Structures are given as C-alpha cells and as structure tokens.
Length: 229
Image 1: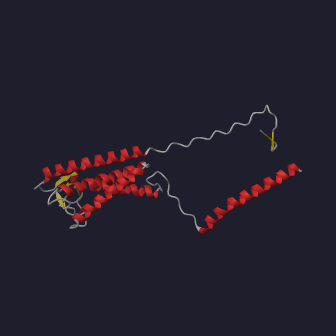
Image 2: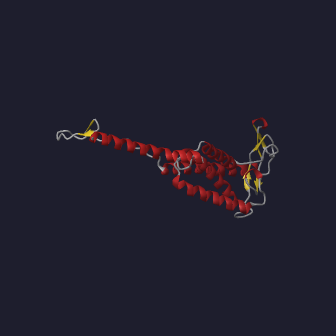
Image 3: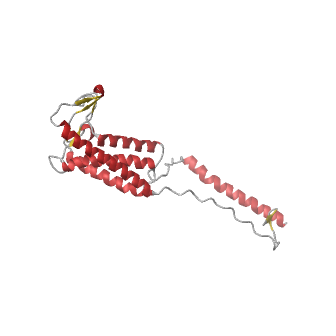
C-alpha cells in the first residue's frame, strides 16, 4: 500500500486489490455470417431458377406481357453475353469468370464477420450461381448456354434499359451494398479501414510519446532522489 509515494511496511496492511479489467466484447462468430451469406445466396438462386423456369414455360413464343401500365414488360430473351446483354459472344469466358467470382467469395467467407458484407456477398453469390447454372445447363451446351432474361423496364424489348433477370438484379444490389460498406470503411472481417498518416504526422506521432515517457521517467527519478535526500 502506498502512502505519499512511499511503500507501507505495516505487516497488517493488505495490498491493494488490482483493478478489474473489463473483458473485451466477444467478436461476432464467423460461422453466423457464413450462414447468413449462404441463406441469402440460396434464396436468390432458388428464386432465380424458379422465375426462369416459369418465364420459359409461359412466355415462349409470345409477345411481351405488359404490367403496371407499361412500367414493366415480360419478354423472353436468351442472352449469350453478360448481365444486361453486354459482352455477347464471350459466353465461355464469362462462365470462367463466374467460377472465379464464386471461388473468391467462398474464400473470403472464411474470415467473414460483417453483416453488411455477408448480405452483399450473398446477393452476388446467388446471382452469379443463377446465371452460371444457365451457362452450364441450357442450350447450346455446357459453358456456352444462353442466360434467360425476361424483365424489361418501360419498353417491351429493352429499348429504355437492357432486358435482365433476378440474378442480374441481385448482383447489382449486392455490389451496391459492398460499395456502401467500403465507403463506410468497413472491411469484410469486421474491422475498419485506417487511413495511413502523412510523413509529418507519423513522425510527430512516433516521437511525442517517447519524449513524454523519457520526461516522465526523469521526473520520477528526480523525485526519488529528493525523497532519499
């Protein structure tokens, strides 16, 4: 026990109990985030496959169906390119890229601790798997299959905006969520992005604490000498 900077020699005096250190908050379990990612991806994939099957069964050989007073149309388009009809003729390359995207997301999932990232990656994964399933199983053959698109805004044949499907929408929304998380400086492992300090700031930050510690040590030593004197 300390008394005015001196150690007490009283044998009956009990030492002060150490201050209780608050335990850090438990980190989010990565398994829960992976489950969330998987559930979202599975729901998107199931809805995408179901709507494509219905679209092929109901819209084959028909004119686009008008909905909501012309706000939305349901044409049936078989797209050999990427989302929204882009990169036609690159079907095999796009299929390989889709495999890479799926593999990358599964690799990231090992350290996933952010809910926002889990939602965004789940949407992208489900959409990528939905379009990849078309490229594998639909005609004209594996890795060359055409993707079924059936949604068009304000125009029957995509004159205002390219014809798309639910998988395309999920990929775009998921990408938007990921961009938002990046703008909020949130990484997929739950940490925050830290800005690197400038040279002057880093130098000041590195030298100031050391100077303070040396001054404190000197003052303590001087105080000890004065007490001994």
